[in-house]
Amino acid sequence: EKPTKGKVIAVGKGSRNEAGQVVPLDVKKDDVVLFAKWGGTEVKVNGEDYLIMKESDIIAVEEAA
Image: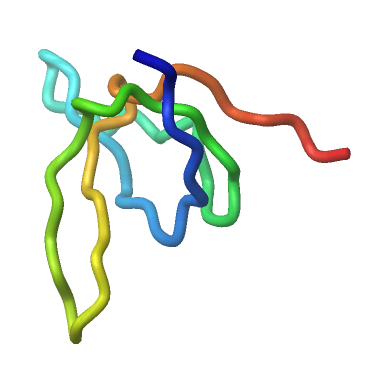
């Protein structure tokens, strides 16, 4: 299946590695990303649908024009 495009609206602080250290994320707010249709978890907040996913589910980040 073709990947889906979306805009990042928020990011967390990062993930923890095996040593317990926080590894910062490569994606940032307002990035446009491509991800597989099966990626993430759908949630509804205040009537709006959002998709929460791990950075590893992101296939690519579009470069700004």
